[in-house]
Length: 75
Image (cartoon, rainbow, N blue to C red; front, side, top):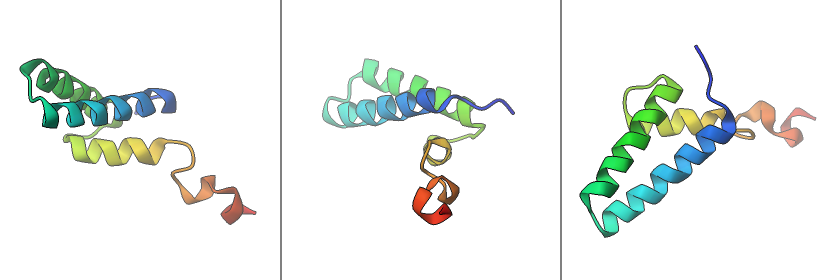
């Protein structure tokens, strides 16, 4: 399976969280559509089928998310 670059995942997570907050505040159709588009991209990028799972998977793929990425624990 192809893996999305961590920078791309970080950007998608940030976009989704911003759009979710904006949608909660304004609730416009444009914001909802863009949020759905970013959610879809997150799902495709992580090989998942729903946005909550995609967010967990994307965060797990970011540097520092795994125990082996922690220099204190691996020293």
